[in-house]
Image (cartoon, rainbow, N blue to C red):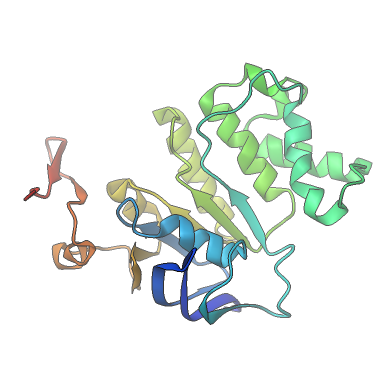
Length: 249
């Protein structure tokens, strides 16, 4: 599989404070990587680093084949709040994912609109195309922003907590769609839901100031201990239950 990007001995942070240290990581076509770790451990900084929003203080982030990242990524950020009174339709939100390619002209060809409608059909929101975003449920809003991330036909789709504030029906459909999309592109997904993420991803990156990469979707208790903090574990069995590591402070 062709390499999409690699991070080589990179450290990064803000205002002279390092958040991530000596990170080595790479992504190739059709990878499906789950990213987990404690709050404050550096997951957001890691995403900003590979998206090119911040530069490493040491080391490098390389993009392949030619170093151009402009059309490489589709990004679905955390969707927590949105101004539902803003007068924009679902279709226009999806088309805004092409702004990086079209600049500030805002002009969309009929082919762009056709592509947007095909993506929305795939995500099950085509019938909402002309609705204002203020009328959408949480799950419908997430689908809209997912379509926005997909319209540029990226090689790598990056999802930051995509199942936040959505119902179980949407979550199930989302993961089914991601499995399908993974045949066409690589995916990086940040999630706190360790039990769900290990069911769907192929490999896992654990981030807590450093990055520990596991070339499978299985995490042992010893590997969890590397977080140095209580992590929620979902245990599968005849009776649904959750196990929490003991807090000592």
